Figure (cartoon, rainbow, N blue to C red):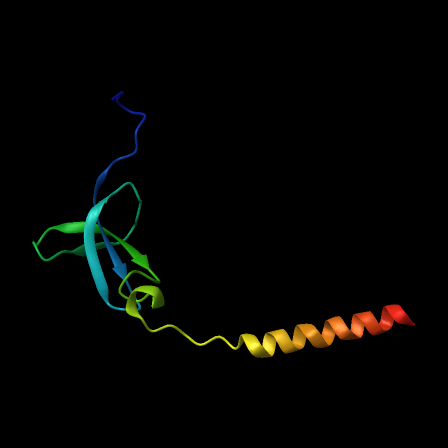
Length: 87
């Protein structure tokens, strides 16, 4: 690899603030914050709002979305638009 053209690839801690879950991996992501990891070393910290520990797809806690009401609203607007066109 050519020197000086690639970003620094180093260990970084990603922390899901919603689930209080953190993992150590390698990344080029930059951060001004640091954290002391379980091995006693200090690593850059990237805060996440969602990860596999808090995402509904992975946790199985899917939220119910009221699609029926949305469909009813759409149909009412569509019917009103059709009625206005007939005038």
